[in-house]
Length: 216
Image (spheres, one colour):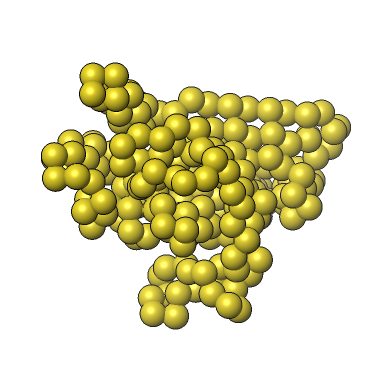
């Protein structure tokens, strides 16, 4: 399938890219169905500097997520180790012998069946946000791997299920968006900060939910 790595190599065919050959210049990754911001290094110096900054937790990464259920807390922190799921090696899971993982979250808005939350990554394990949110009982809306897709429609009232099913079909992915990225330039130390709004698919679902509350 087409990937960001393919697009980069097509755009810069003579690029002597740092990093792994199949991930040219890619300092950190987003899951395939997660939208939002990434930083790509164009030189070995930049690549090493950014990788070290992420390891030292000096890169700020924030996400918006629409999750199943009404969060009972206004904020929280999940510090549970993540490793391969012993029952399915394609999945990740909270495991006793996994790697340290830290996810902080804050409730932005509660709807009847869903909540909108802001997430700050302390670490960057594979599928970390999706695994951690599923672990606390709030899987990401639309996440077909970690329990946020069609099977979760039972969380909605009978009256709400058709609308929720329609929103799931519209999204066709997990409602997770990397909206904020900030870091210091690895060469000259300048602070860079980027933000991007939620894409149309998530924005449309949020607008529907908000309008539904207004008319209820």
